[in-house]
Image (tube, rainbow, N blue to C red):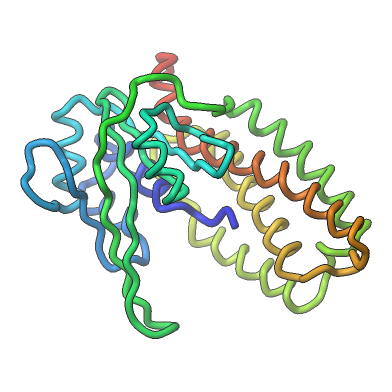
Length: 262
């Protein structure tokens, strides 16, 4: 849960490229990550799919000055602004990238092939028109940081009482995996992002780890229906808060541009 979304990588490194802070090759490699290839389809002025580097250049020529992230879930159109057709596609994918300065958005479609351990992943980003309006339910970085700290504290208290976030080999392996990802992902937000955005994203990922461990460890000591319901009730709002914080962190670059900070 709450692993690094493809939309986050594309927005972060796309913003760095649009600002001239990284080379096109570096931006493309970072955005693709462990996937085999990313293509962009439906780009105005192009008759077929194109690579990320060409697509980002075309979007800049169309007026895009920055990229935002949306991480919607059922009942929570986080980061979206319409129209309904785009929102539906983004909700199905559970993520999207929205251009600031150009009324366009990108929704990923993921294709996987191959056996476990050797999966070949290709991603096609579909370009669709979007409504130029404030994104839904995205907090400021300061709000996100305060909400995360409170949600983490409350969820930890409940999950500890129910003994579902505790110890054991599954939890230890999850924590080790998180630490390894954190070490590899120090530049996940790319050059140009404020330190507070990095801090908020890291905290959101830590909260995501807590949620994952709680789910993957089974019911723990929550043996009654009431206790299991209490665990689910504790996890739902904290997961929602962590998603909001992720979007706030990835969108911080564009928000600062709008406020004239950079």
